[in-house]
Length: 332
Image 1: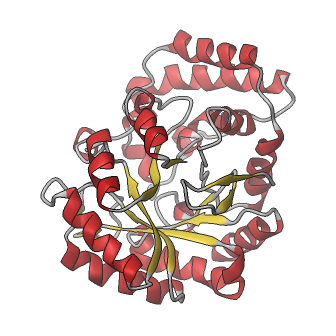
Image 2 (image 1 turned 120 degrees about the horizontal axis):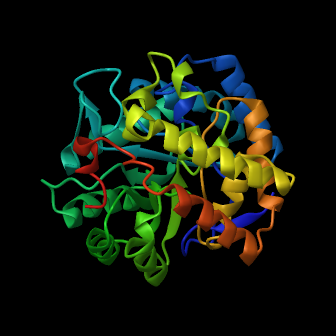
């Protein structure tokens, strides 16, 4: 495994992290035995950066991760998030049935609950899952900074924050990481947000670097189960389905020419965008974890990067990544 530095913290994180959400939330039927095997295999591959959140499976995702985290505490930098609350226990972040609460009062309750579920004394990286439009970001981050002073949190992060919020937050307390969606198909943050991250020394932690599995060319949209929230996303809907299936087929064919899978090629593309980028592809399968881990050894030439850009350009609009309502909480 290769390693990259988390912001200006000096922490060395595996160039590929592990997103744990899908192990028991959002992507169909859970398989705890396979998920635990995947977490243990991540350790074997030197993947020391794991990501969860309190809203995933109503806290049960943190509890699942804790089963492997606790006996291996010194081997993992664990990240979790607060802010989303549920009116519906099955709601996804930003989707109907959830709402965001970035208030300091709620945060103090949330951090204690996460510490208990994770069965640890300190959270390594604590994210605000979004920027609350009703709470000044300075107040939210100020309260998060108090957690650092209290020894409950080591480093602070934001998720899906815009450039102005990043600057305001960083002025209150150093922000180590920004977690946002970033992939071959989702590049909107390159214009303003990524430059601000680089100016301030903030690592970008892309979630869904495989476009929620779409770019792998192994996902059959028609086969998604009723419990899979991707069925609610425009990019997976009928308006864009044919176009996107054609795009990923072309991308996979190019990857095959380079003797790797589409998933590995897509992760290699993300890694090639800068050493300050640490993607966290999610999986609950040992097969895919091995595949993802191998992507750190793939080198893309300038010609490869240009060819990928031309494939994406050829197929045009791939659709919004979220519903209109969920997009209102993005890049604030």
